[in-house]
Image (cartoon, rainbow, N blue to C red):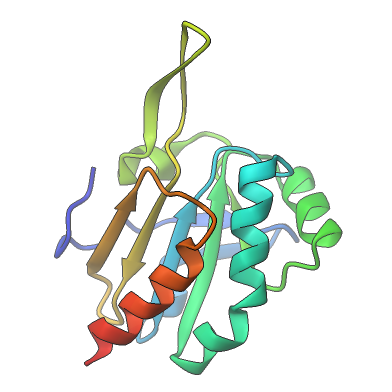
Length: 155
């Protein structure tokens, strides 16, 4: 997994509208890149809706929010439309970017092991370096914690 102060791994992935999005598009801005396991599931919906509700506060500190999962573009579109998501939900179907960030991990549920996305958030500073990493995210107040930390990191 990438570490704080590492350069963020570059990517070029389609968003929910099929438009290619590159990390380099946001140079000079703070980027909140959060990885979620699966669109339209309870935890991922809560996390995404919380970020959406606080979007004006993030924009106020010149921060961009990007969500990412392995869901296909069509599923990301459905997710964005159902919950009126105004930021980009990226589709990493091949899990290349998930692997670069170290979030494609072995997981287990009900005694079965499988590969999946570990819910993780990265704050990337305007120079493209990892400023903070949140592993094993608890979705309830995560958005508030991230916003608070961006404000602290800006000082």
